Length: 219
Image 1 (cartoon, one colour):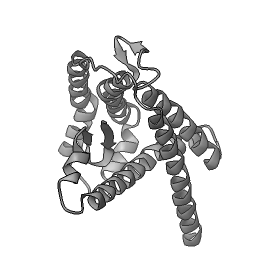
Image 2: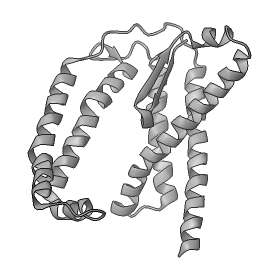
Image 3: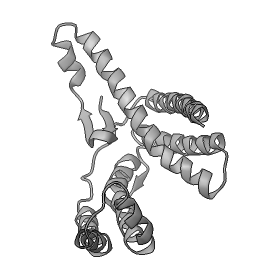
């Protein structure tokens, strides 16, 4: 079977269909295989919690939602997208977007379009719309010279957007090669995905609760 897990913090993707065989060839392989999967789970949980915190904070600040409501909304959306992606290897393998299964299309679209567009938006907003706030944040810890600040401003307004547009243009040409989805992929993959998301939800709620308690003690 294929393991597909992205460790966001290290920008590393694991796609290996033979790693169970590798562990079976070393002493105490079963132990190291369990340890490897536990570490992989923890890495994915912590990365996902940190990423979703941005969405939750946005819903709190801009939509004035309660933290628990924002968390549930984000995780429900994540669960739905995760189930759709998981089922594209099984019962929905015939559903295609531009002749690609849903998982492959979302993988390409997020990596080559959405992430560069996010970087482009940040650069444009920081360089044009909110340069005064950006200037204060940049010089908060260390005072830079006028020439250095001018270069930062030029980079945010012109250089960074230009380079991001180059990345988007080259990424759009690298549409993923066709992958044949397994014809009888087990349905338990979707169940495991849902279980993982639920575990992530409760772990993140516990972490957020402890953070709130810590902040209240400091205040």
